[in-house]
Length: 139
Image (cartoon, rainbow, N blue to C red; front, top):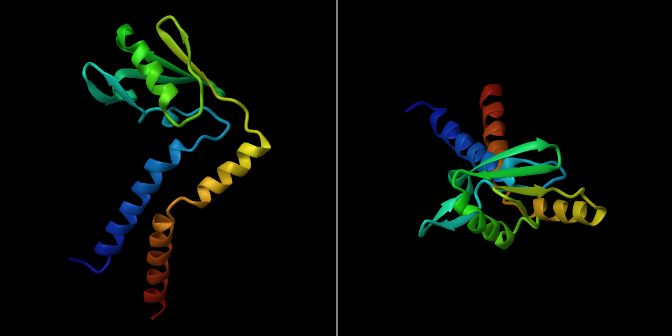
């Protein structure tokens, strides 16, 4: 085991945590990461939305969900309404559209507050590892 293997492992875990959690933050731009991990109860079990449908962003403020099976449209709509993303789905036949509203000043402040509550562990781990590496190089 090398000297850098343990910090490298912790760095990797921290970056994976950050990368999996950051796409779920709702900013003013449409991103498939907002809805791809929504749990949908279909076919008698709970599945992620990305397993049931194709999620695209044809416009900067619009998400389009195209289910692989048209019979799952009501289940997907129900799951999106019950999720905490705060966007009302609009069903258009076999397609579900999610218009992303522009951020208001109130929503921006709420976003800053919610990001402030995020666990700082990944950032702290990365900073600690960087500090240790720089002190080891100096000595």
